[in-house]
Image (cartoon, rainbow, N blue to C red; front, side, top):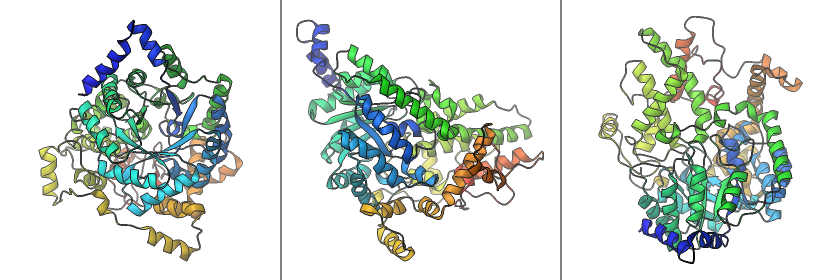
Length: 582
């Protein structure tokens, strides 16, 4: 059926006099719109996003470029990281959305379905409030995804978003496996559209969707639902995304997500200049790019990098790699993956050295990690490798490598979040669990859950309303402060207390010092205070202590007194005291 639909689309183009001429004639009737994923550009490159004042400066320039019908303004982790650097995310969202609203450019956000804007499940009343708040702040479209592609985690959000006045864009997380076939995605799209989706997004977060298969999927959806808008989001990491965009456009796609320099390409997104030129040559109608404005937006983005954002950007994220084709990990997590790898590298080598075995280079360990992810992914039910499940699978693979270096069995260090996914508490896994994983769960006395995962997370808004009243905290315009408190409770408390700003300033000062950059006067006081991560003692045991500390962190445990981290590891786990022994 899907292959037939794709062929029909092709034959239609060729049915009039001369295939090449008529393909150009037909496609010239088809406009392809561009969406600038300014939020994801940053979060696929590093950790933080620009401040409110920076967003206010760049928004008019993006508008002046004249080529964007949509801009991704918020969602994902962007609002959480605002809190982490001591800023109010609600003000940032309103500031960034307002000029686009006034210019008639649609704004969109990323939301994680059951997990909404965080890494763990969210009560239904908080999820519902999110859409009311975000629409009031100026966000037009919500891109709702679930890393398990479980419609039960997406369809309630479709309903709540539409009730709030937003456009509900249901999302299919694209990956490549024996489970994730064209037929699988076509059937999933049918369920989401039946559930009320107004648009469909193909979220190719790792960029490993094969171009031909994507074309087949889009053509099949368009044949049955010609009025459904289809938007494609593809990362450039393994190199397929440019060809994928052409295939999606030819099959009837409507909107393509693009980026701008200096954050385009690498493991991020294709640049709008290249995609515009490619589509125009293929006969599509695409908007002109105001290159003067492009260069100004490029310059401002570089300025923001130089200001502070670049201290959290891993240079390796600017490099494409075909190594991602096999393991399927998303480009957006490469920064955190490399940070984790550096810590575990020392740990594993300390164990190998103790056993008299050859130590591994960082590249050798990276290849082993990719191979291990590829091996265990189907064993764990083949979840789409996207937040948070990409982190779960990566952590399991990394801990397996560590366990082997200790002479232990695989899967002996899986944290509660990982088990939650395995047991069905986040939704239904796309594939089957390996028998040894099922047996391990039984040995631990765990029970599998098959009901709607939302039922496990009861409503919580009354608790937050009560506490805000007791503390004298304002619920904010359109209840936006209430929402932020309920969504990111710990980070919001630290934002309100000023602790978040203190921790961020300390981290920034240390990173500037390490990079050999002059530290501003207002940040120098943080260099003399206790560093974010405990100092490494000058003893021969330091690597072993660091290994144990890092292994405990990845296992979701808090290290005991005296156990330390390597100095190059900068991770929020060492700034926050919320990891507890399980």
